[in-house]
Image 1 (cartoon, rainbow, N blue to C red):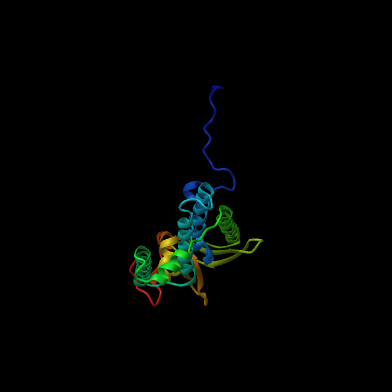
Image 2: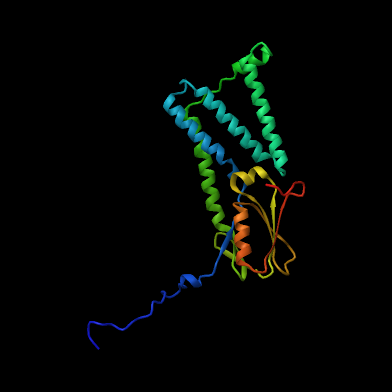
Length: 248
């Protein structure tokens, strides 16, 4: 054999690592707290802070920016506090908001309709400095960072054979069979579904007396589709809240 030639060595993966084609598919399910739905307020606070930083507290348009921030914050609080199980209820909410805004604009343009209301609206001139808005954005950002750290210690992992629950600081592991796993997907709040594709997922392992309820699972339709493809025996039911409809 020539010294310049070396015997062929099969391309084997390093010890402890499976070939890419043979790696076990895994789907991670994470239940998030409702505070994650406040991200529009974080974005609005950051944008308002940048505007006020450039324009100044008494600059032109600052009061309008502050009022818009309060509007976003108020709507976000409504989403946070209440559930909208039907698409019709969401439509009704936006209709009421549109009517109220139209009336307020009408009263501001024609001050003779309701002088006392126009006087009250004229007195509402909110203003805040950039530090205020950046403080709100920073506080929410810290809360979101804490949430992201916390969910690293409490999540579910689904493989073709097992349902694994990782929880605790020391990564405690609970194993359940994934065969004949049944899943119910519920969209209890249409607003939350539009914001983060979130919904409630109920896992029912075979021969287990208690169901596993995961609240606020993000991009729940995508998770359901992946689970359906991975587990051949999976039975999935997708429905709205018992008070709602199934149209989205």
